Image 1 (cartoon, rainbow, N blue to C red):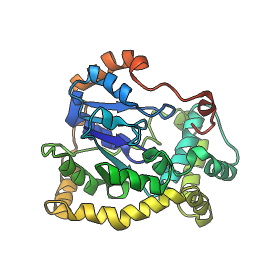
Image 2: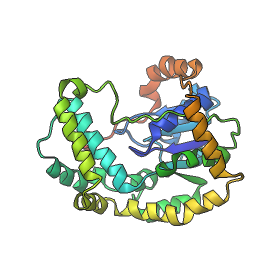
Image 3: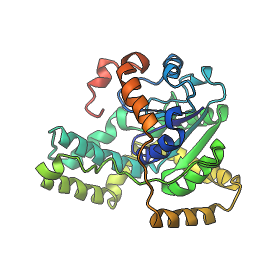
Length: 300
């Protein structure tokens, strides 16, 4: 079984389309970010519905939660993203999400400071991958488990590395990028267009202002160490182990995507299984919500 440890704002929604289309009813994706880590018992129960389960993805998938008790051959992977870029995407997504719920902020600069100070928002990538939430903790996880690092900044190359790593040579890698921070159903697009433009302007500012980026970097020192390590050591090693001409394959892949836009409708069998079987049984299959103190956090 392969397990995608998904951190917020790391292209997981776009990537999940590929997983759903390939693995179909052998794939489980768990939404939600206010839930406990998926436990071995949860996974055993999920296999009542998915007896041939081969792929799982979610914010609840943690490589330190003992899932290997259910499948000793489980392999973990994640999409890693530059910590500052990920944080910029996350904090502006937070503003849009709250606005859709009718919560608006006057002082974006102060919000940024408060957001970066909050423990919930520090080193999210390390906290997704290790119990300690540290770079050293992640290194230990990687040393003890089969692990693949994919990179948002090299999304197409990552797809080819992933396919070879899984051994699923017939996997269709076609995808359509989806920006979950800019969904067309957002109420603020029609109800508060001026506030939406303010958020967009703030996002542009964050991408240029080194002082504001320094605030986000300070909140992500462990994530930055992880990113630098993967970029310097792990990523080159993974690239060198690829069997084939990766650059040529990616060029052909991009050209084909432009010329032949993919039909990415989810297979009916997996959609029915998720909506008609899994969702009604979710309360007894999936992790319980976090304690009250986590639910009361303004950042979750």
